[in-house]
Amino acid sequence: MPDMQPPARRPAFVSVGQTTIDTVIIEGKNPRVQVGGSAYIPARIWADYGVAVGLVSCLGSDLETSALAMPNLDLRGVRRSAGLSTAIELHYSDQQLVGLRVTPGVSEELSVSQVPADYFNADLFYASPAPMEFLLELTALTQRSGIPFAFSPKEDFPAITHPEMKRLMSRCKFCFVNEKELSLVSEKSSLDASI
Image 1 (tube, rainbow, N blue to C red):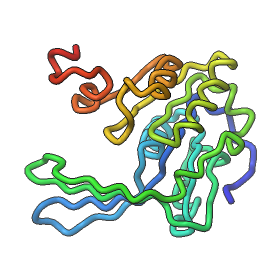
Image 2 (image 1 turned 90 degrees about the vertical axis):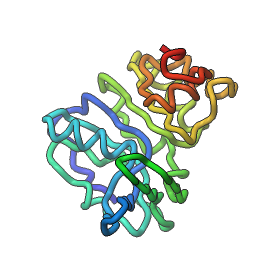
Image 3 (image 1 turned 90 degrees about the horizontal axis):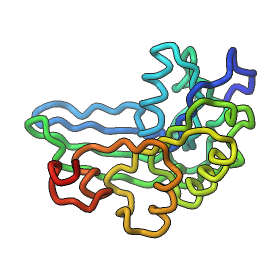
Image 4 (image 1 turned 180 degrees about the horizontal axis):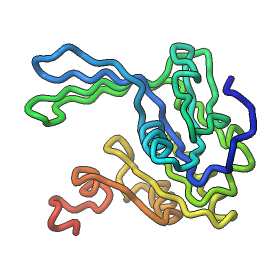
């Protein structure tokens, strides 16, 4: 259970999605295990720069909430569950990602009910992959509250032609993608064609 003390100041940004246990394997080096995740990493970066950030994520019994604690990072939206944390294994060769394996975990249990009410006073919600039903419910709430929603879909999300993905994207003010994800979102075969 996260520390339920009120934050020193309201979160300006709320980062929503996965906090993971990442195993990074770089050819010729020993594997490195670290806390990662497409919601936790941006939250940590913003907090490092002095921005008040709220994190909404689920951790398994193999990861303590205290491992995430740092100044400017509000963890009241983090929930621990009895299962295992989502795990990601990344393989690199010649500075290129050559393998990616995601082992689903308790990130699939994200619920709008775990979002503290005062997070809906934030200036921006940023979300990474999470259960589609959760994202649709959350974007409906942020839309009603007039809070811009930014989304970073990642490669494992459905193409833009999927009806639920279209609905989700229509509610986003910003969408952050890399060149590979851009082709999935835009249905273009090259970066030049997508731009």
